[in-house]
Image (cartoon, rainbow, N blue to C red):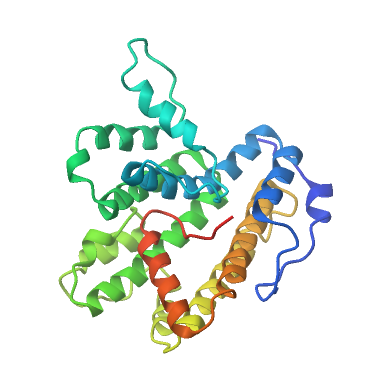
Length: 283
C-alpha cells in the first residue's frame, strides 16, 4: 500500500537538538500546522499521540468535573460533559470520545463513591495501550511500547526499592512487561529480548534526578532516530519529529523550576502519571 509523502513539509522543518534551550514553535501551533499539512488519515495518527493529554483530562474530569484547558488535547470540557449526558439519553447517540474512554466513563457511573485517581489512571493506561496497538501505525505502536516499557521498568525498580508491590503499577502487555510480572516475587533477571535493559538499569542508579531524566530522554531520542531512519518523508518521520518536540517542551518547562528538589518533585509526578500513558509535558 502506498504511503503519503511530505517532502516539502519535512524539508522545511528546522533540525532539533535535545539541548535546544527554547522551542521554535509551540506544540499547539505545530499541531495546527500538521492539521493543515497532512492527509486527514495521517492526521488521525497525530490525534492518537495527543490522546495522552485527554487521558490526563479524563482523570481530572472524573475526579473534579474539570479539565486542564492548557493541555494540547483533542477534546474540550464540553465534549466530556456531552459524552456523559449521552448515557442517559433515550435515543442512542454516537459516542464523542474514543471507545476506551467511553468504557471508563461508564464504569465510573457505577462506582462514583469508590473513585480512586490512581486506579482509574491505571485502567486508562491499560486501555490506551491496547487502543494504540489496534489503531496506530507501526512506528507509533513501537514507540508507545518503548515508553511503556521504560515507565514500567523504572516503576518496577522504584516500587521494589520502597517495598511496594510492582504488579499493581505495571501497564501494557509487551514482552518486557510480562517478564516483569513474572518476576514480581523473585529476583529480576535480564529479559531475553529487551536490549535496553542494562542501559536503563545503569541510568536508574545515577544519583542526580536531572541526570537520570536526561539519559532517559537521550535514549528516547536515539530510538526515535533508529525507528524512523528509513522513513524519510512519511507520517512516521513526522510523528518522530513531534515526539522530539514533546521532549524539548518538557525540558523547557523544567528549566523554569530551579533546584534539585523541585525537579525531583516534578519528575516524581511524571513517574506517577506515566501509568496513564503520558507524561505531563504541558502545552
